[in-house]
Image (cartoon, rainbow, N blue to C red; front, side, top):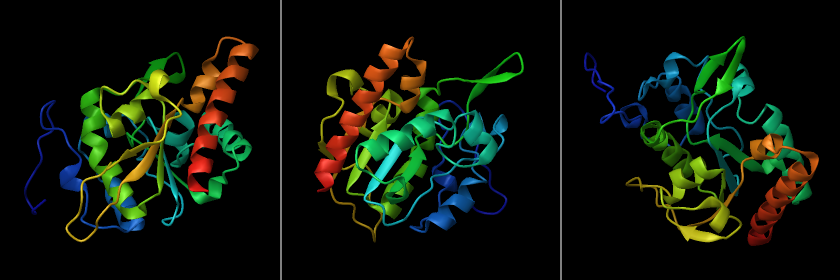
Length: 227
């Protein structure tokens, strides 16, 4: 934005686009994201939680939004769901160090419950407002496969009509980011699966086992695609 200008955030105009630099440097993008005011979620969050991982990563994993621990530590997938993801990636034959991790929404949305901060699902307008950051990350990393963790991430990447439980585990070819004038993004494979937090939310041990096996099976599709 020009010095002295301002960006009025409303339900219709909310967008991170004016805050996203025309750059493919992850360091530059992460620094700019700290000043993003593209929607109101920054007001209640401790800090922005930008993506993390190698720029040359062949896999880019997209979750919904940071959780409580991610918001406090400033890193994606460092809470309980992240521990499940680590194990699932290993069991699928994928090293986390080779994966770029991010979220569709970069600030933690929550509501108080006693002394706890409870995750609150972001609105479609908030997901849309944050999409320019995800597009910038996709242009910077240019992964071979994008993995969407959960329905929110899948619909952010593949559209609102995508049905997670009906279409999960399928390798879909898609152009998932707009092009920069100097950076062409080829078609990439997209695989959607459940979010690791779904394993934690299962009501009993049998449900957790089944959910975890589902997650690993879908990640194995990704590992096979890369081979």
